[in-house]
Amino acid sequence: MTLKHFLTTQDWSRAELDALLAQAAAYKRTRLGSELAGKSIALMFFNPSMRTRTSFELGAHQLGGKAIVLAPGKDAWPIEFDVGTVMDGEAEEHVAEVARVLSRYVDLIAVRAFPKFQDWSIDRQDRVIHAFARHATVPVINMETITHPCQEMAHVMALQERFGTDLRGRKYVLTWTYHPKPLNTAVANSALLIATRYGMDVTLLCPNEGYLLDPRYMDFGRANAAENGGSLTISHDIESAYRGADVVYAKSWGALPFFGRWDQEKAVREASRHFIVDEAKMALTNNGVFSHCLPLRRNIKATDAVMDSPACIAIDEAENRLHVQKAVMAALAGKP
Ligand code: CP
Image 1: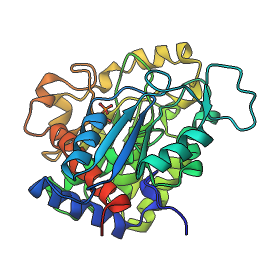
Image 2 (image 1 turned 135 degrees about the vertical axis):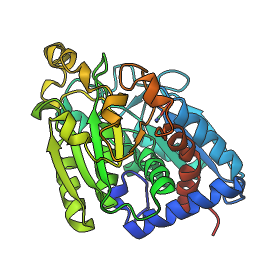
Image 3 (image 1 turned 135 degrees about the horizontal axis):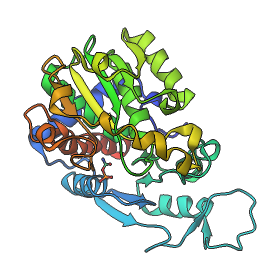
Image 4 (image 1 turned 180 degrees about the vertical axis):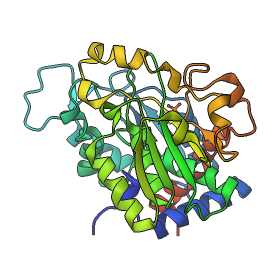
């Protein structure tokens, strides 16, 4: 039997995602459970985190389980992922052993592994988490690689709390924002996936064609929209994109054509600071809500006024990480 992982929401049916959201809502009411009593999860962090680490550790605890946090290359041995390589570099062991050994200890393995930001043709293969999934004999959960499915679920839960469970027909703007550094496309990819999956009319707003997302995610977005009664539109016009929006979701990401040559992207990036989410832009919306996955640089990506306004649901979304991840862990490893 194929092992069920939580690598991307695209692998889960709408009915399964809806069941996760219903369970997450139940956990939000009850907080505690015993579904993970006697169970454990290894949290493998190749990159920093505040929300993900805290909410996974606490979530496991609140369901009676135990989380072990490991940072390979820092407090655990550096790991090799290439196949057939002569391991005469920094790595002390291969993922083939790490994943199988951890599988003897724990019931779930969760992985955060961002791109290396040098060659998108390599990073888009998402090798680290796929290697864990290939070698592990327990379910693997994506804590953010080139998508961020746990964030997706927390985001859609926060939207359902504002708008009700049926999000079809809502005008959803995924806006690129300026950031001094090129960031991961993971949350943008994920926002596109989940907003189209839930039938919203999605506009991807970005400075120019160079900021379009990887064709894999653009294609998933179009297919999801066709399947779920929504739409996917590309816009470079801030005013028309914001006008009438029910949801504004902001994220910064590096332009894929400049991947690994970021100095050449800098001029476009610097010229696009006006993509900041501010009160004037939010005033164009249909009394819309604003959210962001966090962390967020205030007055760079969104103004203080937007972050502190009643329209901002970013804190609700962050809280929901705890509840949806409990639902994911319970679904994959919980006692029936
Ligand atoms: N949104 C999110 O994943 O936050 P952290 O990077 O702090 O985990």
